[in-house]
Image (tube, rainbow, N blue to C red; front, side, top):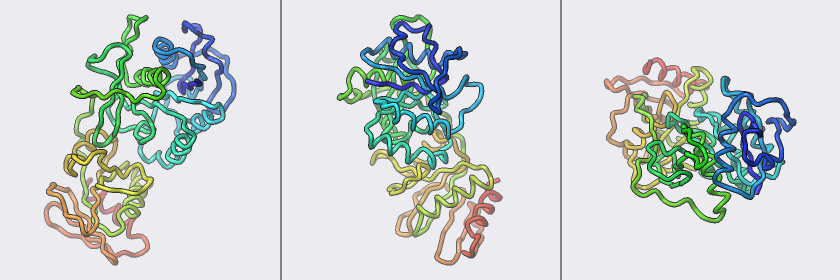
Length: 344
């Protein structure tokens, strides 16, 4: 089995089985032989070799250290490289909490899924929804922060927004130091896939699941339209381009590739509950709650309600004021500008 660790480079001298590292390349496919400054990738490789055997390891260097952010295009190039290198399992400890990066990642994740390449990706340590971990065909990994599992043990649970999440105890049998962070849950989960390739992760049952974020008190807008998927995506694009505002939308049922439009992962979660969860676990500045015209508006204290008619848009604020925007050529830009002004 061929495993890829996409990280800052592995120091082979620190491994018990350095011969398992069969290739060391950069994100653009070039070999590297210089010294590795950081310990992050080496720690991931140590965890992997402590809990699994019978694999080859391809070390893909995407950064020299984690003092600077990595561009989403580099990450995408590294994932493409995994296809060329005939990787079976991708172990990824980094990601992006900007869901707008899904425009680059979504088609690539689909491609990996079709090729049956498995991926384990870590959730943000803050508990924010993270790409690629949030994709349905990617295993989202988090640390067992409360130490409720045995070293190397994995359990899965279901979150109303994040979907299936695998929690893993990252403590090693052969090391005494603590390995803190969701990053190190990825190699533990990858080791489980190596050992049990045809078995699902066992279910957690009653479990203090993961370290979640606190509420952010982001403004929430109810948006009612007959074409909600298209209009919501375009408006979120405008907000990002003009005001650098990341936004997401909640809807009961969706048929769209826009990862920012979020549906509940179970039938139990109500829309108000989903809004509260999104406010905790999505790194954004604004939440839309999408309705078709035949839907019943939920009993929720929306900051603003937008009613999108055929020829005009009506904006109602929580103090019962109404503004009207005619649907001319630039009505979506006007709407975004008005929302930003009203919500400060």
